[in-house]
Each structure stands twice: as C-alpha cells, then as structure tokens.
Image (tube, rainbow, N blue to C red):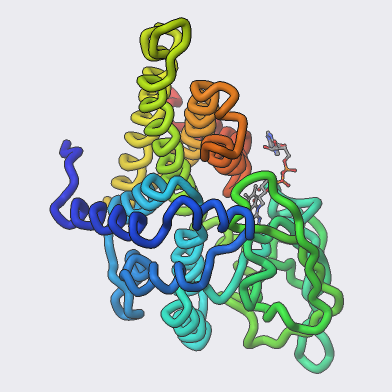
Length: 385
Ligand SMILES: Cc1cc2nc3c(=O)[nH]c(=O)nc-3n(C[C@H](O)[C@H](O)[C@H](O)COP(=O)(O)OP(=O)(O)OC[C@H]3O[C@@H](n4cnc5c(N)ncnc54)[C@H](O)[C@@H]3O)c2cc1C
C-alpha cells in the first residue's frame, strides 16, 4: 500500500496552489458568493492553465488521468480556495455527454467547453414530486403526428439552469405514470419557446445558483435526444458513483480549509489568560476533526482506487457519500464553534464552508438514500454461505 503522491501529482498540487494564490484572492471569492457567479475571466484562466482538460479523453483534446488524480485535483482546488466552484461539475457534464451523446452533440459540447470552459448544459432531473425517487418523475414527451415531440412538466433545483445555454432534461416517454420506466434524455436550448425558469434562493453554495424550470408544450425533434430512446434512467444512474466521490472530494477540501483556520486560531485566541488550545475540550475538537478528515480522505481515495482498478463501488461510493458529507459538515461546524462569536459572522469563511458542506448532505443523493443503496447490499455481502 502506497499513500504517497507521484511526482506528477506533487506538481499538480503545486500548480493548483500557485493558480489559486494568483487568480483567486479572498475578496474575489467573497464577491463570487455575493454575486452568485464566477467571472468569465476566472473560468478562462482555469481553462488556459490546463486544469479544465484534466480527466477528459485524449481524442477529445483532454488530458486523461486516473480517478485518484482527479480526486486530488478536486480536493486540492477546494482546499486551496476554500470554496465550491462549478469547475468540477463542468468536467463531469462534458464526460456525461461523451458517454451518452452522438458525435455531433459531443462536438458541440466540446467546442463550447474548450472555448469558454463551461459545459453546454445544466442537468434537469429532479422534480418537485420526484427527487430521491427519480423514477416517479412525471415530465413527459409525447410523439406528434409530424414526428416531433411535445415536452411538458417541471424540473427543479437545476444548478446553473439560468446561466448555461441548454438543459439536459430527463423525461418519461409517452406515459408519465410511475410504473413507466421508459425515459429519455433531451438537450433543450434554454431559449426554446415554452421553456421558462424561476430563480430559487439557496442558503449555501451560492456561487452555483439553481432554479425551477417549466416546460409547456416545448417542441422537440428527434435530433435533440441524447443517448438511446428509453434508456435515460440507466444513463441517469451510471455516473452517480463518480459524481458522489467528487462531491466528497470538494467537501473534504473546504472542510480542510476550515480545519486550517480553526487549528491556527486555537493558538492565537486567549481566554482566562491562556490560549484556548490549552483546554482539553478544544484539543478534543481538533482531534475529532482530524479523525473525520482522515477517515473521509482514506475512504475517498480507496473508493477512487477501486474505480481505477475496475472494481464495483456501488456500496463504497454510498458509504463514502453518507459518511463524508456529514463528517465534513461536522468539521466545519466545530471550526465555527472554535471561533466563537466571530465564527457566526461573515468576517470568517467558516459559516460559508459549513453551509456549502451541509448542502452536499442532500445533493447527489441524500444521506438517507445512501443507506437505501448500501444497506441491503451489505446484508447480501455479509450473508452466511
Ligand atoms: C446543492 C444542490 C444542488 C442540486 N443540483 C441539482 C441539479 O443540478 N439537477 C437536479 O436535477 N437536481 C439537483 N439537486 C436536487 C437533489 O438531487 C435532490 O434534492 C435530492 O435528490 C433529494 O430529493 P428531494 O429534495 O426531492 O428530497 P425527497 O426525495 O423528497 O426526500 C425528502 C427526505 O426523505 C428522505 N427519504 C426519501 N426517500 C427515502 C427512503 N427511501 N428512505 C429513507 N429516507 C428517504 C430524504 O433523504 C430526505 O431527507 C440539487 C440539490 C442540492 C441541495
């Protein structure tokens, strides 16, 4: 077992740190949260520095790497900047299109990405009546006599839904009833007649706002379908495992940033004439925070290594997501506590980090759904022979 970084990974870490020092000063990050967006110059700088290409296949102009390295990139970027950014979602979306799209759709998606550093589309899967239970979605397409389709329904919590030029919509084919498992993916331009949006106000991760989307007799043509007709549900599930790993890599990075701040503060802040680190209750907090970070990191990289070595990670990715999101939220919460009253202001980044981590206990599959995924499988794994 080798826990050390390769020379290339060391170099990657150094270049991320350097990029963040140069391009992401604290006041810019504060502004990004306030303005709920990432400036185009920063997205382009990220692209020009080469980070955006890491993890994409070579034939599409990317710089392929193993999943462990993608995890390191994600964790380190979040750690160095102390914030969540859309860059990771972008590379995942492009990879989704490479997996499911036809040549024309992939070309279009990559052209946009390589030029602007942004994906072509947001992901419209969840509905007001169907989040965890995606199969119960009722957004539906119905074929018309002229061969076109009419799309009707509503999506919600669509991240970047109002800023990206298209949305990848999952919709039932013909029949919206819960027993109908046949669904397809459609790439729908945001300006299509009949599509409207309404902003939702997040309590955290404000850099990436989300919105509701309404589809009212939106006309689709066959060439807007992404992937095989009827197999949308399979596609929807396929990339969740990797997404969950990278969500936790992000949480881990920002929780580590909270740990950095809080641990340093314990040596600086004095009460009753002594630095607060002299109190065992504070020492215990740091100890438990470090254990939570180490456990999350070990679970994360072991799961990514399993993916790299072709092993199934249905259970492991669910265990990681459930444990890691809660552990990182707890680390951020304790960091805030260590700062006392100051922690509960916007003078530090701890409240922001806590809220960002908290959202990840819901996004990409809730804590409870991770039990739903792992629990029964674990019983099977441990069944007596
Ligand atoms: C930051 C953020 C970004 C997001 N981005 C997107 C996006 O880009 N695109 C998109 O489509 N969606 C997005 N979502 C939506 C997200 O996928 C859903 O919120 C999530 O899947 C949960 O669905 P729900 O909110 O409908 O909760 P529900 O499914 O209604 O669940 C309600 C509660 O019941 C629990 N529960 C549900 N079923 C079970 C069960 N079987 N056993 C035990 N407990 C259960 C849940 O864990 C939860 O606590 C985002 C959400 C967040 C927070």
